[in-house]
Length: 337
Ligand code: PHE
Image (tube, rainbow, N blue to C red):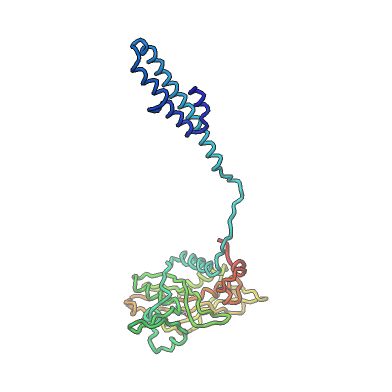
């Protein structure tokens, strides 16, 4: 009887019930074993081995059936969890890399190859880092040029600003580490301005090199290497135009030679000049504000509008569209990840 109930147990639970009903404490086989105590010695001699044999047989049958059911359960699970690795993958909606992010990555990579680290500073700056340490004291006319966004003054009357350029990162870097310094600082900058070439939030990348014998030739060589790599041309001709920034002396604006044949920009040679960035040798007063001795250390700095570089390289004509977050625009100008 047990042989057929064991064979009929459809799953492991049913089999366990059969085990309890036969070999369990109150099971039928255990009941028969208990009966041995009340038998005569002669009966016991016959029935003892017989019942022990029965017990072993039942245990063996249970174990065999258990093995079969376990394997069946495993196979059922494997079948239900099967993954068809040949099915095509659904990528869903994929975002695109904004041309500005792309250009910032390109710039960081070019300068990394030249041995520059990437430095950062806060968007909300104080007067010291954004202005006075950069040799732009209160009442300096250059302050007016910047169309600064001021935050509400704190209890002590100090007004924080949204940084008007990435130059405060120069100050933070020089105050925090000793020369030799070679950094770029890409990031957001803010000025109250709005037209086809100006947005109140825009991006710059700052460059700063401070060492013992740094001179203008290093600045020019660095910018040439950068612009050649960025515009993917074999040669660039630079024009260094004397200019004025309070924090550099001498100061110069840098143009690259180019042509606009048929509306397409070609960097390299041609009869036009494209203004790319502001630069100069770090002013001794700026070094002093950062506790560096100008007789021991010199260096150069430059600041460059990233959005404009992105527009030039990727043929975007209205800066305002760059920050509209129009999906059609992003799909058109964005880069795949
Ligand atoms: N901070 C300047 C600007 O925003 C650019 C600049 C940076 C010029 C470093 C010289 C040196 O116009």
